[in-house]
Image (cartoon, rainbow, N blue to C red):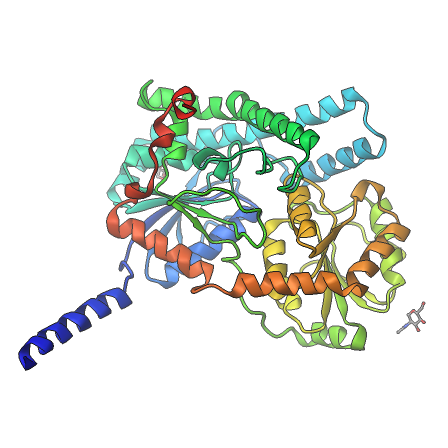
Length: 496
Ligand SMILES: *[C@@H]1O[C@H](CO)[C@@H](O)[C@H](O)[C@H]1NC(C)=O
Ligand SMILES: *[C@@H]1O[C@H](CO)[C@@H](O)[C@H](O)[C@H]1NC(C)=O
């Protein structure tokens, strides 16, 4: 009896210690990131992987503006593109924004609108062409390809916003994990999970999950538009690559849909509920962490706000600055508030700043959002900022400018945690009214605190979840058992 329980105790100890140390020691991971704000969150995953003893190699282009060649936590492979069209990203987005504001303000002539749209699509096409050329460079450089093979990677981690990594992973016969919210045609769910457009708003259309008939019609239109853009503008670049190196039997879309695990940068406190799939893992907010103390100057400034507290304003990394007509209106409104304001601002400073407003080039956003004196966050509605605001429970005044920012702010507005102002029609009066509403009506703060409590109430931090599934894929050399067959079907079979 005693010996039996001794054996089972031993078994128990063995299995428990097995469970307690699930890490795959020294896995080797090849990463294809997307530059810009996407890199910021990919880098968080890479740091996590490095801290767990994995070896990470990042593929970057020589013209990358965020992904550094040398870093303590990863190695890099730098690819020089022969015909690198230098995309002056920052200038491009500022010009784009100025044009868009103009169109919105003047109720756009059709020609101006078409021109504007055409410019965006041309840019989109160029960006994907560059990404596909990265693949060509890798496949054509036999020394490089061999050295990648010799490195014996265990898996490929990629951001399928620029999905060239799936093609390289196919060549290397490696399992893939996506760090994803966007794929080529919009939100990632749309290509792997059933997405009824009756209640799932399409990317590019800011609507809630309760749409009336007209809204559903618009939603269907946006869905068709996204599909066309994907089919005719984005995918041909990758189809060409596939055709050249793998022949007609391999389909780019099957590679894209066939990823082993989708680490989805989504939390349903933010997104509307919708159908999902067993290989989609939700890691929304994985980049969030507790705040740390401020520098003594900032702390002094923040403390000087007294009982009124302070407001934080940042429009993100992509758009360097708003036109001065708008910033001077914002400055005038801020000057009327009893709160202090910290404003991350890169362009020309407005000349009518109130003495309560501090302009900074950079700020420790997470530490400020976590400060007990913060009252509101004026933001453009990029997801990194929104998740940090949810994490710290800070209500948002949104000034969406481009892309998904309109949908993001709308989602927070539907949840009662944000208010939106339209940049094209912003003036000191309506901006002041909006910020005072967010500051003085407690419902915004209360709704955000509630979302924050829901977001925090998880068995493990989403970063742990992400690292767990990456290691899962390395342990089992994929996760194909979680993948549905739907992705291999032509759509006429899928539908019946
Ligand atoms: C091929 O890759 C190797 C290793 O990364 C690099 O040193 C070399 O310059 C590349 N050759 C060409 C032609 O790009
Ligand atoms: C800031 O400006 C307000 C109103 O213009 C004025 O009452 C206040 O004394 C000023 N504070 C400082 C510290 O200069």
